[in-house]
Image (cartoon, rainbow, N blue to C red; front, top):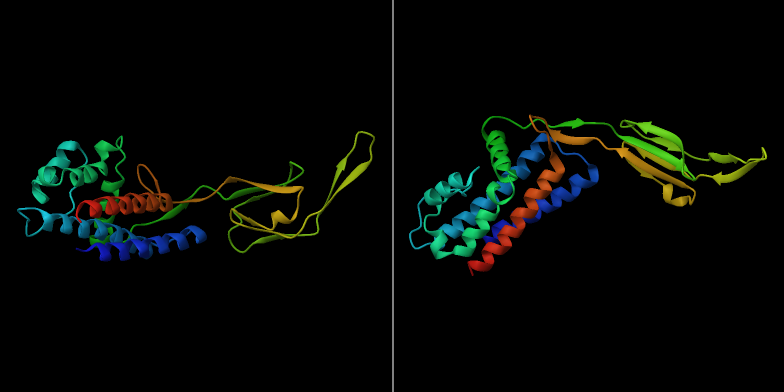
Length: 237
């Protein structure tokens, strides 16, 4: 069984995703590496399933298809008879397919991207949208930042006043030090009367007819494959 190999790949992917989420960035080479590790996890599992069948094949690939008919054809080509010998495992494989997920074709997309990155070239990633942050004092917007990406803006020792109906002013206090970089704000927790809102964050996407937001897509693939691995190996014991 290759379960330990799958576990090592998934652990490595999880660690990479944790770093990527903190940095909110990933380059094309790292993206290719994660895609290949995700795909390899599925292929290792498929090899273990194949070895448990009464008539294993010499060469197989993880079965998938855009439609139910495509999927069934891929099953017959790669893991023929699994629906009879290991019906639960068949159900787990089918649960990843588009026709079982209201047309969500994450698996097909992942495999297609992996094939492209492996044979044709790196997948180009780009940022879309803006980093847009507003700082509030007592709920009133006082500073606005759009696309502060290179370096950071530091705010400190700003005193805020509000005008009263009688013409006098009330001192709300002086804010602590606040650092703004991109859509990240640090230090606001030091002031009870100061808050911030993130209006928009730039999104790292794979551009195309339907842009794919990279980090959520990788997390979805990881979560789906991790659960699939757990389910399948429970049945193959």
